[in-house]
Image 1 (tube, rainbow, N blue to C red):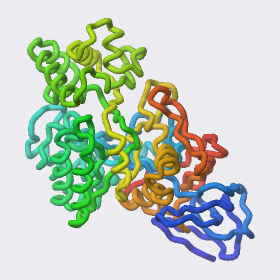
Image 2: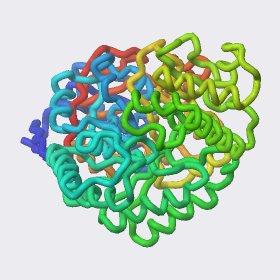
Image 3: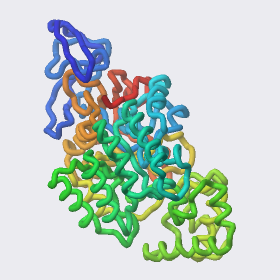
Image 4: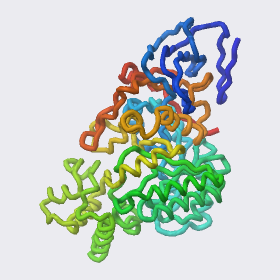
Length: 519
């Protein structure tokens, strides 16, 4: 009898038995280490890899012919926002069709406050992907203080520390911040540092949507690095980029900051989506102070002529810094008040409303949309050269920054459908920015190691059978900004915990995902 023990699992099988539940035969195996591929077979039972190599004498209930295809660990998306969407679409089809088998949610400071309860819900619901979670600083602050703009009292600080500690004990992989969002933007470094120290006691990661990704990006990076150093925990810089035309080319400044910090001994890594547009709320165009205390307070402030004028002047100054004459760069992803405007830029929305074709009128249009509840937006404003430069950094992971998509709802950013396929097609196969082996490492073992997802991210005996089988010549992202609701192609099979979830390019309906709790 042979016994494999991995990440607390015991797997027993006869040393002489040559039978598996699933057998993947004849593929070009890329094991996730970054090493070159080799031909071989993989045998799977009880949700785990039980044997690799030449398994010509083996039999199985299900045999997958992988000749001519790449066999790799399932992709790990370290930056997602799936909360509230799991119940709407537990099949997580947009992720499965893009080769993703595990997601980390709770990013940008946005999570459920009770991580234990959330992970229990995931296990009860049974999603098609595995789910790990960060505890979000914004929700922690909101649970204790609401959306007020002030420092916490000592009593409030202790309450926030207790929420973070409970989350870490319940299996959170770390703490995230969204220092551009309300109420996180009202917090000072000292507050975040105290909470990060709690996560550090439980060996968590500090994942930060930094305070700025445009003009003050270097200051924001240094703040995140400072928190990592002083709290004594690994740092993950979320969706690393340079926003705004005035900042194009500044990856020559920002990447060296990360490289220097690693050389000095700080475990800092980054993630990136492979597009020149970002996606977030329309509210980010407005000054932070206007957004305090909820929707009613926002409307009340904007109703005052002096404040309305100040807000519009603020937006016009920011537009001028971008060296633009119109608000052509923000495009509506989803506007509940009028879905016919989905897919239109603010400049186009302003024209539809038959207003003067000038930036001042467009700023007024933004204010009125905020009064009606705001909107999800896609912001075009990054340089392709910066995207490529950042992509070549070896401690950079690929991440969608996306939710579970509801097919044909709204006009969302295509990253939610095609992040991994785009890297493999455009940047690996077509433009050769990085090698296939390196891309797979960044999608698998690097994120698994960073977030301590034990038993995942590599094709090793005893590891979870999270596996993707794809055609490196045919893999392609079809989702575009104009027509985002299109699944990636070229992925033939996806296995999650040994269950065939994508078979011959079609979702089987399997929901074998589970919560991943940090031990």
